[in-house]
Length: 214
Image 1 (tube, rainbow, N blue to C red):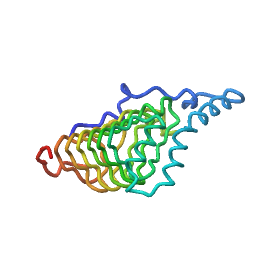
Image 2: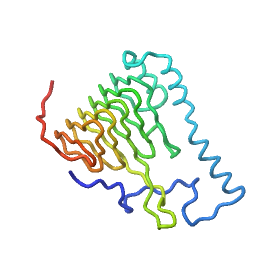
Image 3: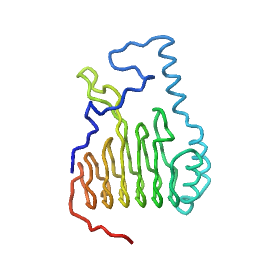
Image 4: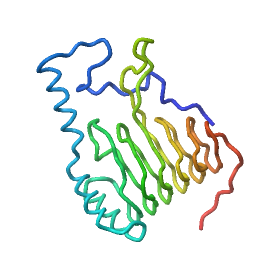
């Protein structure tokens, strides 16, 4: 498994302009303006309408309809994608709606958390189980007086046919290779090679898996 690039400073995203960076002073109207913009970008009106509509539907069986609702809200949701329950999508970074792509035939269960500080791509026929957490945003390591440093983000990709099982955690910058399986509760800190089964904290390759088409 290759190392995740999520902590490399040379590939980190620029800090969100509305948030004061460590060591920078912000007072009065300037601080108020920054946080007003941050709150505005956190509202996501059409996403919240989609969540309200989806909440009226039964979980699991209404997956196709829910996929269409999220597509209406502005997300890239492929034909036949099956979303079994409401997705918890979080971010105050720009371009919220363009940062989630769900491929054709993908299956997403309920109680999934996806942070959209950066792009999240879920490939064709991939499957995401309940209580999976996918995060693209983080912070650089600061000095001892304040360890949480500048904001940074990197994309997460789950390739074609992969299966992420219950309660797994994916950190910024990782790719789950096509046809692979991430075991329940695994913490993915590095890229998962294609057609492998990984488990543990941190996730490690346990065995190879055969590739085939149904």
